[in-house]
Length: 114
Length: 111
Image (cartoon, rainbow over all chains, first blue to last red):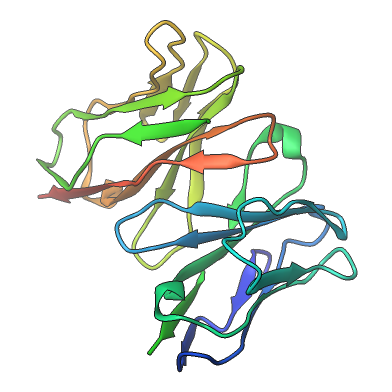
């Protein structure tokens, strides 16, 4: 499809496990964002890529969270030693031109840590 | 820091009723303002935007005006439809690097 694709759509894991969430942005979009959305809350910024580099990672909550975008397209959000508080929907968005302000969101990856 | 405060929901309206969802913002500079909408089972999508003071964004019968003097960007629609049932998020962007979202307002329109 032509939209932002996120996999898996649902992930259930146990406390302490490692998790990877994948985002495939719209082809040609250079900007890529990760957000986290907890129940009843708005999306919370995690990290923003412009091309391959993380232009702003100030939203990552701690060093258990890491994201990469090695070829400037697909991005992976990695969470080590998961905790129950990490349970949320992780949203990815991409944008062609940062200046237009229009983000195209995927449907999200719902992470549940038991 | 920058932030958005959004009217809490949920909101339930009858079809053809008038809708207002309040949104106010705090920003150090001159942000762009947005309304995003999330329909059931779908990802967030841009509904409308305004990039400077006094601009009016509009789409699908929805409107919002960027009011610098009251730091507001209220969403309005004159006559809602059942298909407008969704969660609405107000957001601001400080030069496009970061987007700050409100907590969302759930709207249910009943026939």
